[in-house]
Amino acid sequence: MIEIDEEYCKGCSICIDFCPLEVLEISDKINRKGYYPPVPTYEEKCIGCRFCELLCPEFSIMVINE
Ligand code: SF4
Ligand code: SF4
Image 1: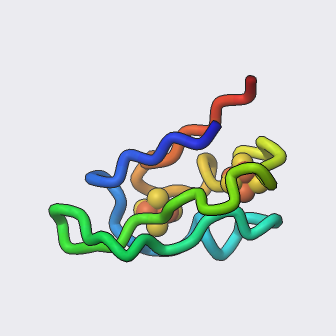
Image 2: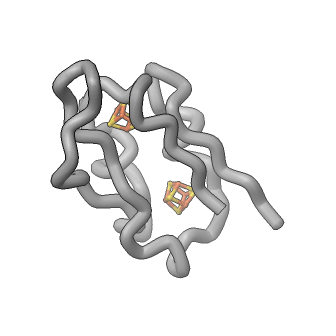
């Protein structure tokens, strides 16, 4: 499960670019800071590697392995 705190995101796209399975996409909704956060459009493909969580400079993503 991928939890994204949209309001802390600064829209850098690192999580999207480095996800090995292209799970994340840019949202079409803007957050309060004026950035487009990611959305886990293909969450079913996620392997729980936590790469996105570790790389996010704003600590906006948390991956919960069930
Ligand atoms: S945990 Fe890994 S596979 Fe899942 S969204 Fe993050 S980078 Fe992609
Ligand atoms: S890496 Fe973090 S700050 Fe950058 S787009 Fe992804 S969630 Fe937002």
